Length: 284
Image 1 (cartoon, rainbow, N blue to C red):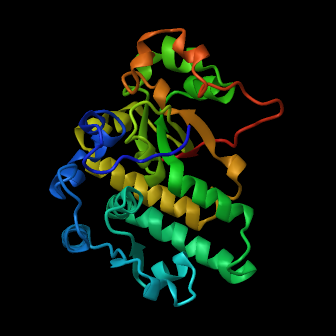
Image 2 (image 1 turned 60 degrees about the horizontal axis):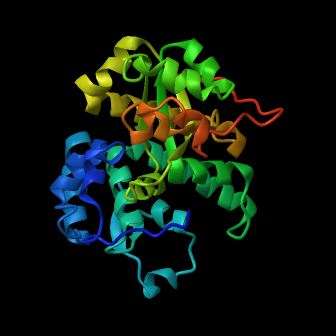
Image 3 (image 1 turned 180 degrees about the vertical axis):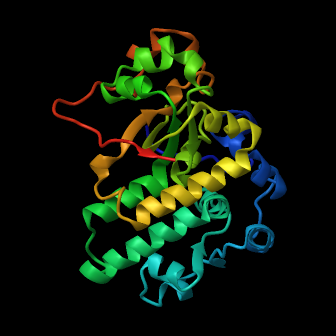
């Protein structure tokens, strides 16, 4: 399906009440979205507020203008200097700015790793690790799981098992935090079938329960843990390390999840390719 992102005045308001965008409602509401586009000064004010609260620096948001791009630097190199090039009235860049506010450690770790690879291979080439990092940054999610049996269903792409027979597990033994800003942008179109590129963290059921009881603390734990894994090069060495997860199969995330046949008929539920194997999960 061709990407045609709706303008602010045409976006269907109901998408902000449905996952995954409903999870970002607080930040969007502060900025007045979807009523009007926030300008860079509003984003900077929110950045300053969040920085003061957690003490973690984020790059300044600067307008992406021809003069800025004329410096010849790579996008990641500007971030390394403390400048996040941002297009105004642009969903993709607005959601990227919000990801920086929520997951600064992950964003910084990705930037450090990206810049290290750029220094090694140059600005015109890309390593397998750079591709993996971009896939995760744009379309990634973090999955918390306390039940190895659910991971086994996922390993073999048993979507009926993972999403239908084990539908009561979602929110209890497995939970998802959507991170990628391009994935959030796709969610602006309610007809979309969404698939995320995931990193899995095994944990206990109590930690999964905290996703709703204390979401800020859980996000901070995830942010620190994933950042450490990226810094250690324990994840995102190759795009094949990422697990695809059809988010539209999570109960309540798509109208089709009330029908068992949805999990075999919808095109996002693909069979496992011969020879495809996923790496073991990390731990929270």
